[in-house]
Image (cartoon, rainbow, N blue to C red; front, side, top):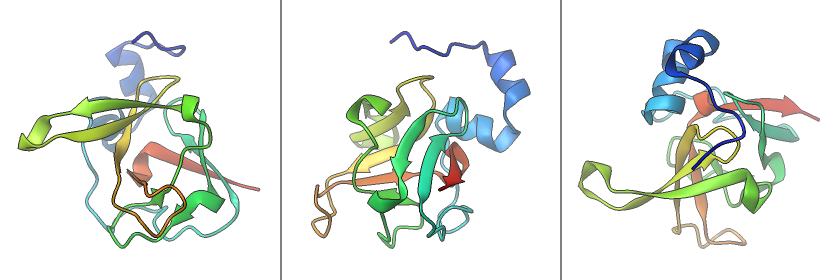
Length: 132
């Protein structure tokens, strides 16, 4: 897919820290329970760390006890791109920023306690929190 924000690997490397680059551009996963946004509880917006696109709102965040910030829906369905991921010998749904294609995490349909039943399990390093 062509993205509104397109940069070369070298450009991304100059804009992102090595940890951010690994997650956002190489689809790595941060270790559970280590993300700075896991315990963020203020009202605000979660944006793509790579391009600044608004992705999630604080009112859809919930404690899923999985070790990563979790949301039950994206701010707007057009804000994220869902892609089949067959790495690691399983089939999952990868979540990418629809504006720049950066890897954010995965979405699972295992949250019956939420209005949608979905758990967008995001890497803290892929997001930037902007308080209201």
